[in-house]
Length: 205
Ligand code: C5P
Image (cartoon, rainbow, N blue to C red; front, side, top):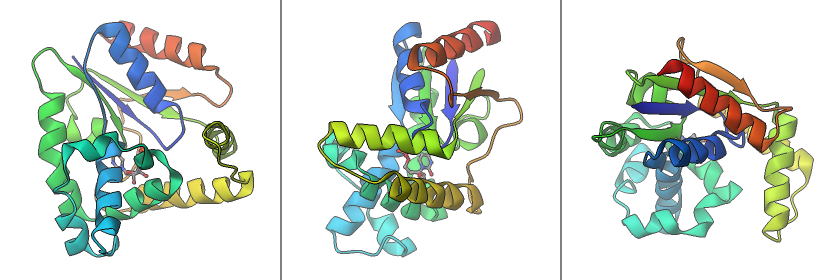
């Protein structure tokens, strides 16, 4: 069973994907981390994230980079969104995601294009979303917990810019797959959102 969980940043898709993986005993891949690793690596190498050649060269990163806590910050998130525009970068990361998705026994993957490009045959496709205000509030709270204060307005502007870039790119844009089930977490608590996702998987399989 392949479970595809797509949606914009801070929508709750990562939390839902992790919980589904634990509930159904499946391995989980956060595909955003791959793009974040490319974003971090390109800058570390002194390259330009907007250059397709520089970004492509950064797709060869060590596995240990995926554990770097820096990958989670907003600066790296924005870099990820810039490198993810380049078709050559998406192509270079495709095989790794595809083989994870098709491993024996199934898998849960979360990202932007899992149900549309990486695993269009997924038995379950969820599209998790929430208003930009609520997503920005969640991200600000996470940052505050990590000891960093970011203004809500700044965060909303950053998320809106990222949504715009992810939705309007030509290659594998963020979109709702026609057969995806929508989960809007704007006014759902974490437990309710997870319960809705578990129900969706149970009724689809
Ligand atoms: O989900 P996360 O915020 O970690 O993703 C960071 C960025 O990586 C996104 O804004 C998006 O541009 C890119 N991404 C993507 N395709 C995916 C996962 C992430 O383009 N499957």
